[in-house]
Image (tube, one colour):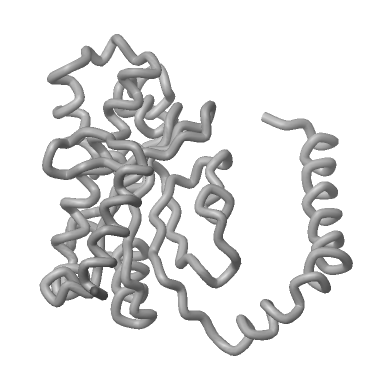
Length: 232
């Protein structure tokens, strides 16, 4: 736990950052923010972990207004009807209210939520009952990962395997949401799972058919070919 002095220092740092934004950053992007003041029209819903090391706009090189961002512990999406609340309403609003055309679920390396799933007691879940209950939405991913690894082998490879299985599970959960199901049926909505490696910066796409990660370059090439064929 931080000391009183450390907590005060952290708050001062945030305030100085906000001051810098007001005086330096905002004036340089004034036209962008003027347009955003009139409303938003993001192209994608980006579902990411609340982990402080993940910056959706940075890793996608997008500007404010481009992404509708939903963050929570473990980038989880409860199946429709299981836990109607903030996550479900954000998904519904993004699809029906904002008309996003893509939903990305992004997992990442060294994920604390995945570590807690593998080793609950070691990671203090006995003291965090709300977190423990929330992580039940990833239990099926844990079962799938443990077909390959044992829970006691909670190294980077095991955590990555579980994080990837979790992304695939949350994509399946997404399809149970009525707004998403309707968008998929109309072919106006695309779902995709990503895995982000914090240490290397590498982003890979998870293929739902093979359940394996594929290089992002190959996915880009395939999408470009499909676009060219449709416009030819």
